Image (cartoon, rainbow, N blue to C red; front, side, top):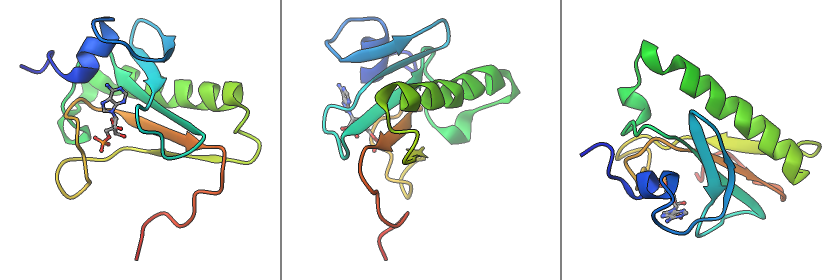
Length: 116
Ligand code: AMP
């Protein structure tokens, strides 16, 4: 059931999370296993399984996810030095939770984009 991911439970406030932003389209909360001093996940409130599943109807929510990422990076004080946003898609992309999410990572040099 697309609406019943672990992130849907976070969106609905049914499981605890460190929520840093919520609006009509997206929710942002700190990753439970942070890989950088700032590691925030930004998810659509309405579950979309993967980036490969988006349609034209999702353009507003996709735009909101990016804008919220930029705003939160500024709030976190990482915008000046820079940061990374990442979306893992399906198996080869290393996606673990099948509720579309954008990772906002920053607060230290993040190294090369991929391990060789
Ligand atoms: P991905 O590999 O892109 O699917 O990333 C999933 C991310 O979700 C991982 O970085 C996990 O640490 C994170 N995660 C899983 N469950 C939770 C949760 N309940 N609250 C916050 N982050 C979570």
